[in-house]
Length: 122
Image 1 (cartoon, rainbow, N blue to C red):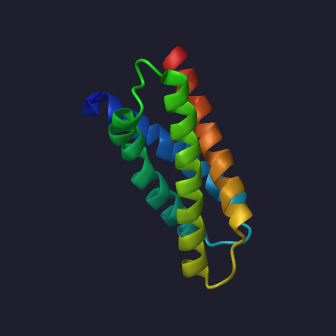
Image 2 (cartoon, rainbow, N blue to C red):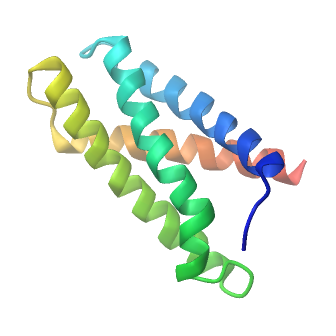
């Protein structure tokens, strides 16, 4: 399934806006805001097109929607946690606990998913 840019770009903007806001709110006390924004942008910027344009070729979203969403979101959550962990560790020169990155990724992705679902339903 291929999505036109007219559908993809608003979803990307909504995702980036939501996830960056959540990440900044969660991580700003221990990391520079610029580093958090960079980490979040790289994480979402890498995974979002994969979920929209690659993952549907792995699991057909039309016939296995729940499996597509659950597996895709879990995979994205893990990949983004690793990217957050790597970027923040490198940019700040201090240890970032992997569970901190995993929790931040889970909350950011959860907020993004819920907001996207609300926008889609309404």
